[in-house]
Length: 273
Image (cartoon, rainbow, N blue to C red; front, side, top):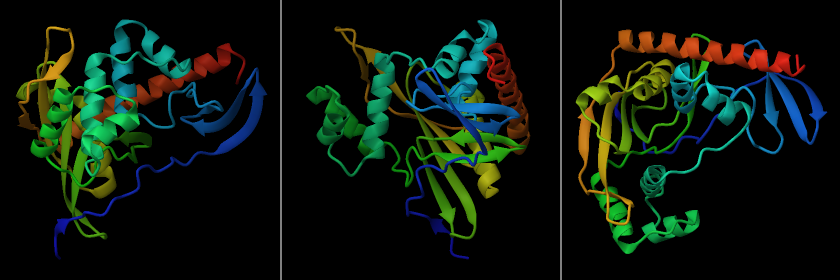
């Protein structure tokens, strides 16, 4: 069998199948109910979000819920039950610029920034071009993939990945995750659960555990208080075993059911079920 990297683009997203039960209008919002995790899942017609969070478990959801063990999950309720958006920090904006510059590599940096409405200095655009040259060029960037693990729908959206093999069988997956900002090292990369969730999705979908590398892009705060990349790139190969993924998968299953129980309580408290 000829094993080669698959260059063709795969679809950006796959809608998770839901069973639509009924429709109802409450106040000025239209609620569509789907059965997920034994509870009705509501989607708001104005695209604010939905009370359950999503019809899947993403890394962001899992991380917010995990942190919520210390504060009663207040942030999760605000973001996913009430639809509030977090303010964008300078570090988040810089990370978004790097991700977009890499995902739309066929466009000039100036065009990417203009289309996103970003104000970027000449120095910053040169730095983004620098990362285009020196970070790996994965065939697929910021592509969403959904897959169930023991009945729980998981969503992966890695910064980049390559698939090797044929259309019938994938034999190798190379996955990269870019991180900017605060310090990363080998130990922290090896313990990072985001990579575990992504690996579970690919493992369950293709039968292959990816070869992972975390790419750290250090930053510093300049005299004006802006965060700037240093220009350095550190690569941390960080493999996972089946045993590690099964252990992490059990935690994601627990989180999924805890969120479902919380959503059920919210629905009952508001007379929705």
